[in-house]
Image (cartoon, rainbow, N blue to C red; front, side, top):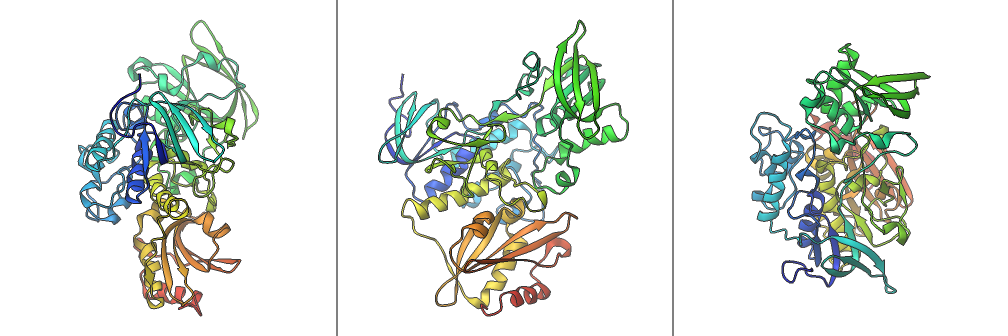
Length: 499
């Protein structure tokens, strides 16, 4: 039976946000502050999303440093706190560390859940809980109608923050249906003295390996592609804390193995399983006799009936194709928030991915998306403070040195100044770098932070003059301080004629 009371009853809105995990909460927070009339709905009965259940071993792979060089009420502290949601109000910032007990700088699952619940309460981010999205249609005027267990919602824009929340197994492996998925893992002590074969070498695979190291007699991790340690070590994806320990155990001869192999079939035996595989980087046939097999093959995005509207996907049908502003490339008006925004790939400079698969990255995407929707769809008008030419250099170098969104979304988000007809600049704020390079229409300057293939960190400056975009790396610096005389001279020379 549909709810008769509660927030956001069925009806007409400018936008509807689906999902009450960190992506949905952060998006709703910024939509409110942009004056966009929207509904936030969720099939869950409380805030938290996947953090109400996962990770299995109850410890996140992203850190929050309780004691850091910056005060917790400042924006700069976000650099050291990868798990709190963003807020304009100082009392709503950096909530994650306030729930941590200090035994690790990786929060426990329940600590993460508690900070999300607290954020929703203190920020007054209301949600219609227990309201399940069932189907979607588009009307002749372009508006969407979202059918739910509580009734129909009509809106110009839909924003799905449903996460990559559905367990996924690859097709084409005979017998994989007989083995449990990551979400079905038994108690770790049940693997004591046993051999375990993990299918998958991404986050969930190495998380399981890390958690089972004290218990299992032997662990084998296998997938066709090799682990790219150079990317993991320098990537802002922060997975290295769960990747490196099992990997080092393998390298140092600790009895475990990390294999580059394609799994062909899995057969039950009287004592366990036989896993048949073909080596990839080193060709050859392999047969592994093990006690347990676990599919640590990841998750997929719950897209419901959106494909029937013409939505294209990629990554083995697990992610929707997206523009730099996280809009479906084939169904205009449908946007994404939270972990799904990793489907907007960006430029992948030096092979590094965005940080959009985790809170520390996608929280900034939500802020940029709300501003983009206000500017382009809902008449919010651009919020672009003037920056005098004499102040532009310091403005850009200050961003490269201090702005946490540039550091947590390296080569993905940039801070931009747009040149105005009178020769001054308008502060555009953060924009997707791919949009600035490919689609920006005005003369402008953008600065971002990039880590190159050698692990050296530089500010990168992009200058658009008409249809021409040039790219320039500034010098690296000890302690990442780019507000120096030398950097000012470099940037001034690049902007000759504009400053």
